[in-house]
Amino acid sequence: MPKPKGRHPHQRLNAVRVKNISKPGRHADGNGLYLLVEKSGAKRWMLRTIVAGKRCDIGLGSLQLVKLPAAREEATRLRSLARKGQDVLAARRSERKTVPTFEGAAKTVHEQHAASFRNKKHKIDWLASLEADVFPVFGSRPVNTIDAGDVLKALTPIWNTKPETARRIKQRVKVVLDWAIASGHRSGNNPVDGITKVLPRHRQTASHHPALPYTQVPAFVQTIRDSKTGEPAKLAFEFLILTAARTTEVTGAKWSEIDRASKTWTIPAERIKAGREHRVPLSERCLELLAAAEKLSDGCPYVFRGRTPKVPLSNMVFLMVLRRLKRTDITTHGFRSTFRDWTAERTNAPRAVCEAALAHVVGNKTEAAYMRSDLFEQRTKLMDSWAQFATKEPAKVLPLHG
Image (cartoon, rainbow, N blue to C red; front, side, top):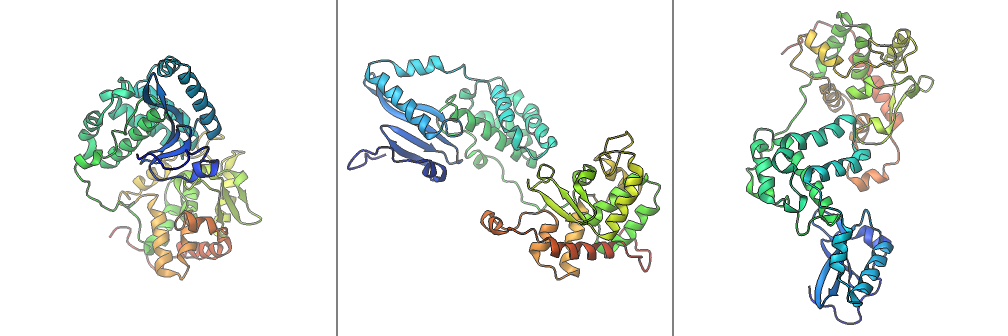
């Protein structure tokens, strides 16, 4: 890095610049303090100063943990000690805790990120995947000793056999090692960067949940009603189809989320994949299903109660229904695709309305930021039409297979 001409920078950075800087490299604040931006987007502080006649780079911590004023204060303190002839590096080493193992670092990162996980299953899977395929390879090793060869050794056995799992594990290992670098436990580049260059390329194939053709939905709904399935499961399955909701959203629905006066089901942000509150318009048939479910609720806070009082239906209930009907060719989640196909081929509803009905984020972040309306009125008409179509008496019994 060439020495800048003119006056030395002094407090060149501010909170806004620190937040918005995204270009990888060193960004000078002045007096030897730099903000380092990694290719991954991680940001950390570094002090460049002279210790015992030698130029040294001293890590001051991640931007997430150390803000600009604190970084300046610590940089000033260390530079002052260095001028007095003290061995700042030795002092820093004595202050720093023992370098954690990869397993210890992973558990720390997992705990720190727990609040950002989408759901309980994802939270469990995040650590479980590392326990299964990474910890046996280098989990007991200090994070500052792990190199690209170690990462390659962990990923190679599963890269082709479990490609999606392998990609997720690679990303999780990268996050842990990014944390280790930012925390001062290791230096240099993250060994995960560029590892895919020496691994076989995954063939990109579209992955879709097997779905029922929308023309067969009326007959399928009637089949559900006529089946020997338990009444709560019948009601919940039809409710899921008519609202185009996800399994966990339906099984976890509470009476407190339902406003029958305004014909609205409001799903809180913590139960939505996109992480924001979602209002679902309720058709007349949905209100009938809710009335029937209420008679069976026996005071249960959940709309569709399970076998045990005050406990909701299991997330496996719809899968079991499909198995009893010998419908292994379709999935519960596939009914969202069925709904989307119907909107595309049988309605003139704008794409934004159709995607909003599925609680999908429309467009990029900038476009989404300007989309203040949830298009509720238009979605109400769309969901009413869908319910009328899905519950109409079929003119003939449509084949369930084929």
